[in-house]
Length: 372
Image (cartoon, rainbow, N blue to C red; front, top):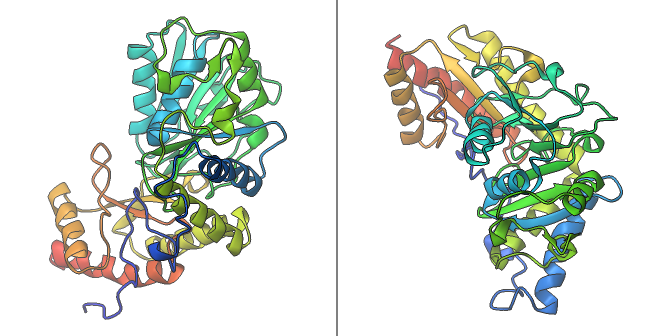
């Protein structure tokens, strides 16, 4: 039978992700609108973005947080172009975004000493093959595959190289071993349900040392430059952004941080996401026609939950369209490069009750397209 109850919030997109529960754009602090981002007010608010982020995430002493252009992609590219080339590089890729960084490193930067470790959608490459004397580039959570790195045990604490981690769908949703991560990037529109176009760049003291002691043998566009006269441009990490940010988006991000703080901090946000995943795990265990794309439960993402079904690709599309038309789940089709299936965002901004209400609709929509 067709379910009666619908999710109160049908927005399960994996980016931009759902706004937080109770969000009201009219309640944002917008005193910065129409003001220069270089004004004392503008810089103080942007500085809060950096300090509040570091405080909430519990970053180690000496780690720097900066707002940079072009979302997570811009932050990753800034790191790759500014830091790589001093040492051999190990690149781990198992879905589309990691594959993109691999392409940039080998075809755009054209680095010679690169080792590649890849895996198909649903799997992780052999992380233990990482060489601690090399720089390491990887995603923490494969947003398009639903496969995450389970822990940081494979990263040597006494490594000589840098670890560069794209963690856009993991920060604020998964426990990260910050002391083992030298560069971490993410964007506001993922776990916190913020607005797009701005990236976050977190640097360890080791990454700063690399920037100040080694110059990349390539021209860098202005928006990639993190040093001047051999020294880190500290202003980038104190609210003096490289280019003009949207102060409305900044206000939105600070609102999201305040919400996380009100939950009880990052651990509470992680637990919300994990409870959402648990709802889907229970449903999958009870139905043999639906499976997780991530075969190993320890590698199963609790944010971008990717599922496969015993349907043909056109049937999956029909199911996704049906869920959308019924107003119970928008934007839940698998990423275009991934195997046909569903991708349901389960980050902290999603209510567990909405995931619970969605599950019967999945069964109903499956039966409709399957003809059962």
